[in-house]
Amino acid sequence: MILDAKHALQQKLFRQFAETEFTKELQDKLDQTGEFDWDIHRKMAKYGFMGVKIPKEYGGQGADYLSYALLVEEFARVSAVLSIYANTSNSLGGGPLMLAGTEEQKRKYLPAVASGEKIMAFALTEPGAGSDAGGTTTTAVADGDDFILNGRKCFISGAPMADWCIVFAKTDPTARGSRGISMFVVDMKLPGVSCGAHEHKMGINGYPTSDVVLEDVRVSKDCLVGPLHKGFAYAMKTLDGGRLGMAAQAVGIAQSCLDEAVKYAKERKQFGRPIADFQGISFMIADMATEVAAARELVYNAAVLKDKNMDATSACSMAKLFAAEVANRCAYKAVQIHGGYGYIKEYKVERLYRDARICSIYEGTSQVQQMVIAGQLLKK
Image (cartoon, rainbow, N blue to C red; front, side, top):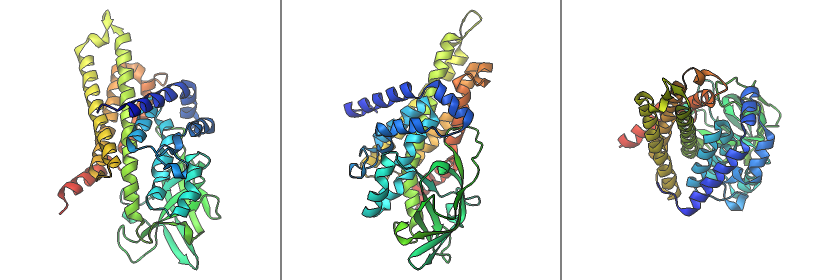
C-alpha cells in the first residue's frame, strides 16, 4: 500500500520518536529489570500517543486504525515492549469502553486513559480459560445496587501498574459456554483486589504481567459496561482491534530482524568477503523481505477495512496469524545469519528472538486465528 501524505507524515513522526527516545540504554534496562518505566510512559502521553485512537471528545487524537497500526509498527521496529506502552490504551484497555460504554462511562474513564494519567488493563484470561474464554469461572453476583466479584485472572499485561481493569465475569450461571458473561470496570484499589507476583517472562520485559485476584470485590452497577450477559461479544469485538495492533507489532519486530540481518550481512566478512555475497545468506534475506512486505500489506488492508466500518474479523485474524509467524521466522533467520553472535545478548537479534515468540500466542494463538478464519469462511 502506498500511504497518502497524512499517513506518510505520521509514519515518519512515529519512527523519529522511537529512534530518538527508545535508547539502547532504556531498552537494556527494561530487559534486565522487567520494570515499567514511568518516564517514557509520560513522554509518550505528552505527545498524545496514549490516545491516538481515542475520539477527540474524550481527550484522544481521534486518529484512524491505519494511524494506530503505523504507530505500533514503528514503535515495535525499535522496541517491541515499548510499543505496548502506547498500544494498550488504544486497544484492549480503552477498547471495551469505546465499543460499549455509556456516555457517562466514556467521559469518566477515557480522558484519563488518553492522557496517560491512568492505566487500564484488560482481564479476560483465566488459569483454566485461556483460548476458551467461554470457560470463564470468575463470577459477578448481583447484590442490591452492586455486584460482588470473585475469581482469578492470569497473564494480565499491565495489571501491576493499572488503575482500572476491564474484568469479564459470569453473571448468569445457568448460561452455557460464552453466554452469560458481562464486562465490568474495576478500580484496582478496591478492597479485595490484589495482583499476583510479576511473571518472569521470556521476552517483552519491561511491561509487567501478573494475575488479578478478586475476593468479594463489591462494585456498583454503574461499573457494568455494555448490556448484562452480553460481555463476551464485546470481548471478541475488542480483540479484533487488538489483533490488528499485535499484527502491526509483529510486522515491526520482523522488519527490525530484517534490518539487523541486512546490516550484519554487509559488515561481517568470511572467506575474504561479506557474507551477504553468499547465496545461502542472500536468499534468506530475500525471503525475509518478501514475507515482511506481505505481512505489512495484510495489516494495512485490515486497518483500512476497519476504517471503512466493514467486516474485518477475518482480515484481522489473517494479519495476526501471518505476521506473527513471519516475525518468528524472521527472528530465527536473523539469529542464524548472525551465527554465534546472534546468541549473545549484546546483539539486538537475541532480544528480538525472545520478543517475537509471544506474537503467535497472545491475543489469540495462531491456532485460534485459524479457527476464526475457518469459522468465517465455513459458517452457514
